[in-house]
Length: 350
Ligand code: NAP
Ligand code: ZN
Image (cartoon, rainbow, N blue to C red; front, side, top):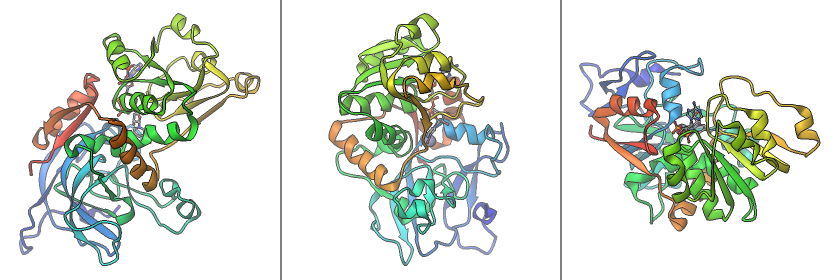
């Protein structure tokens, strides 16, 4: 990572009015810092941030949960903003256009995954919150292909979470669920509450698995036909053999054996939340019913664009609590408390 992108303005530099809320170490509050305007490469787009969702992955990066955070870091990867500058070779977006940027900011565009339309699997992927300034900044840069025009029919103030949480749940649902599928969603948080809405729009029969009793009624309102306690062994036992697709958005240890047992023949347990401990899988539980265990990470730019159109057409709306960007530290504390219903969005006030 080039840390020149975080450098404070030099005394002789022209005042550029760029700034960001920066994390300098794990567990430290973010501090607002004035920044130099970095040079824009030929393929890049500069976006002035208007709104940015707060995903659990931002918290994981801030806390160095995955052991690879390099400070200083600027969080935020559910960005909505307007294009303020275009590199000479930037395509597909126009100055002033309203756009979104998600977990990824750039990919090489010439490797096999990129050329197959799986740019999110590029070995040289650059993350918005690692190699670039994230959305807790006044302005951010991304490769033009990762800057997704916001379609009509979406409320810009609420759409940010679609760029990460939305596409992350949309990708496995459109790939693996049919209208006749029985789908389970584990964890009704930022990802989970959007997964319920997407699965409902696909037409699936939906079972929500939650550890929070107060979410039972809300999960039904978001599209669930059944709600099951995710940590009640008897309740899980009753689901045995039912589900064609079970998507997990939690990052905690659950009874994975009991959850795999809820899968129907050829059913799939699909991980989106990186559980910190290895998941024990009995091979016989897969073999005899031809079940599978899999996972995925966000989605390609075309999947992000499709997600936005699908959300606009089906009135899929992230339920957001709003904080002004200057209260980013309170917003992070709120996310960590687990009480947010269901996503937090920061509104830029630089
Ligand atoms: P979130 O809003 O905090 O939701 C996580 C949900 O997990 C909570 O709402 C809660 O749902 C459940 N949960 C939390 N603690 C639990 C416990 N002790 N026992 C049982 N359930 C518990 O987080 P998020 O932003 O949706 O992100 C979810 C995970 O996905 C994070 O680990 C994040 O890093 C990851 N993620 C992955 C991708 C990807 O590309 N694969 C993309 C974005 C995020 P209930 O209250 O309903 O139990
Ligand atoms: Zn995210």
